[in-house]
Amino acid sequence: ANVMNTAVMTPAFTGPRPSLRASRGPRSRNTASTANVASVAMIHSISKKRSNRAPALVTSLPNTLCASRCGGLRSPGTFVRSRRNAATAQTATAATAMVAGLAMRVAVISDIHANYHALETVLAEIDAARVDVVWCLGDTVGYGPRPNDCCETVKSRAEQSLVGNHDLVVLGELAVSDFNDEAAAAATWTASVLTEQSRAFLAGLEPCASLDGVELFHASARDPVWEYVLTEEAAHATLELAEAPLVLVGHSHVALALALDGETVAGGLAPGGTEVQLSGRWLLNPGSVGQPRDGDPRAAWLLLDLQRRFAAFHRVAYPIEKTQSEMRERRLPPALAARLERGE
Image 1 (cartoon, rainbow, N blue to C red):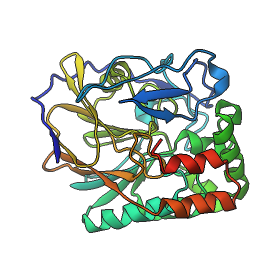
Image 2: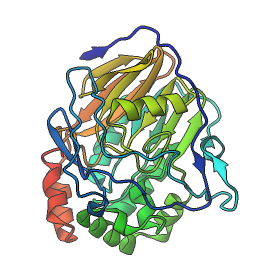
Image 3: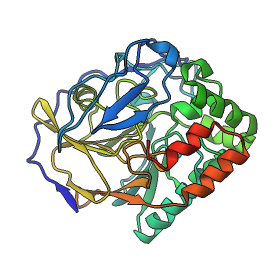
């Protein structure tokens, strides 16, 4: 296994959190439509209308995440509506769901994207690992062919779930025009087939959550809906804004293990088999269950042992061709099916 160890890190300065207000606004930044980590192309669901510039490249040397920026990043963050009290402006801390008690062994999943075959394969492996709870970092739907099955399964299996940008667009809380053509087409189809039960499940979720010693964000601490944590600067900002020693993010579909070492961020890509001793401040991304973008098409998930302060990144093969066949049957964009076998 790949093992990452680091000395105890100096805690980052904890600044004010990004505000959350009563409505989710569209993105106001220019963002490149592609990013590149370790020479692996990752096509993100970012509107082509946002930028006419050439895509920014984010490359990684072994155990290093470079500081190249993936387009302009907005602060203080995406404004989101708290479904529990839509009339009240809340900070990210106030809007999060609090979970009583902290389980010892946690399976973390993210970015399922309506890929039910990947989800059920991952959950079978999670069951074999004898975890206490499952946490989902959002984007249960979008892109894939079985949104309702995935919503039902996540609702029944995950003790803590977040909402992601692809979940929000099918609820009508983000504009379809904020997404590229293929993602928009998939979102429109998903919205047309989503059951009332699935809508109610997604509508009850928030993009961030705070637990005892762990903070969860779909995207990042300063923009929990949209920002990709694929640069040293973005990682450093999230670790500064978060208070917990361990921060979990999704959204980028890239498995990462990043540690705060003084004023710098150390670490990088976390392929399957990577193991981390969680001393100091860490930011982890479990990778994507349903649409990996790090060159490995296998479904990704993360095992946390919070008592031993240990994390292990897992990958598991699933029948990609079954998901692709279901996507073709539903006439979803062919490129979305093709990318699954390439892990991009």
